[in-house]
Amino acid sequence: MILGIESSCDDTSAAVLCGTEMLSNVIASQAVHMQYGGVIPELASRAHQQNIVPVVDTALKNASVGVSDLDAIAFTRGPGLLGSLLVGVSFSKGLAVANNIPLVEVNHLQGHILSHFIDIPGETVPHPSFPFLCLLVSGGHTQIVKVTAPLEMEIVGTTIDDAAGEAFDKCAKVMGLPYPGGPVIDRLAAQGDAERFRFAKPSVPGFDYSFSGLKTSFLYFLRDRVKEEPGFIEANINDLCASLQKTVVDILLGKLVRAAREFRIRDIAIAGGVSANSGLRKGVTAEGERRGWRTFLPPLKFTTDNAAMIAVTGYFRYRQGEFSSLSVAPEARIEN
Ligand code: KG4
Ligand code: ZN
Image (cartoon, rainbow, N blue to C red; front, side, top):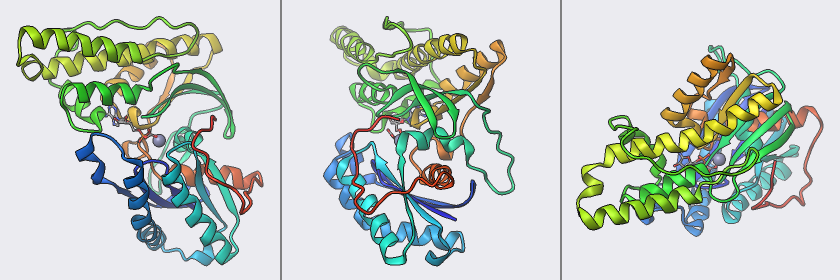
C-alpha cells in the first residue's frame, strides 16, 4: 500500500495505490497563477502548504485506508520548482518519521512515463511491453526515452532549448490567450484550418528537438501581419491555432518515427501534459496504424501532474528495495 505525493509545480496531489492498482487520486489545482500568465513559484509553494494536508487526508479517506496501513510514502524529489518540491518532501518526511513508514523518492519524469502502468479497478488498461519508446512532452521537458524495464530508462533525444508545452504556452501568450495556453490552442484548433499557415520546422541532428525558433518565427509573423491588419489575430485565431498545433505535432512525430525505426521498437507511448493534445493523440495513432506500432495514449487524467504516477513509480522502487533516508533533499534539476 503506497501513498504518493506530488508537488513539483502547481498541482498538489496525493494518491493511494495497492501495488499498481489505484484506490484514490486527488488533485488540487491552483487557479491563482492564471491572472499572471504563468506559474509564480512563491505563490505555488504557499498554495501547496494550504492544500497538502486536506489533499492527503482526502486521498486516504477515498481509498478507505489509514496511515497505519501504508507500506511506503513515495514523493516527487524533482525535477520541478524548489519551493514547491520542498512542501511535498518535508510533508512526506514528517509523516514517515512520525509513523515509522519507509520513504521512497521518485523522479517526476519517470512518473509521467510509468503512468502507463497504473491499473484502474474495473477497467482493462493495456501496458506497453519492454522495450518501448516514450515521447515525454510536458511544460518543462521534451524527450524520447527508451524504456527497457520499469526503472531502466535512457534519454535518446531531448530538446536543446524550449519544451513543446512551453512552445504552446508562449505562442498562446503572443496571441493574447490565457495560461496555460496548450489546452486553449487545442480547443480552438479543432475549428481551424491547419493548412492555412506554414511555419518553419527546425533542423536539429539526431533525435533532439528545438522549439525556440518556432516561437520566434511565430512572434515575428504575427507582428508583421498585425501591422498590416490590426485585427488579424482575432479574425484568424482558429486557423492560427490549428496551423501552429500541426507544426508542433509534425516536429514531435518526425523524430519519434525515426527513433522507432532506428531502435526497431514498435511499442510507442506518449506521456506528460502535452500528451493530452488531441492533434498529437490523433497523429501518433495514425502513424501507429501506418507502421504497425502498438500505441499507448495515457488516460487524460494521467497526462497532467498527478500523484498516482508517483505512487506507481514508488511501488516499482519499493519492490527493488530502493528507499530514501531522512536526509533526502529536493532537487530542482535532475534527469531520468
Ligand atoms: O506535465 P505537465 O502537467 O506539467 C509539467 O511537468 O510541465 O504539463 C503541462 C504542460 C503545459 O505546457 C500545458 O500547456 C500543456 O502541458 N498541455 C497541453 C494540453 N494540455 C496541457 N498542450 C497542448 N494541448 C493540450 N491539450
Ligand atoms: Zn509533469
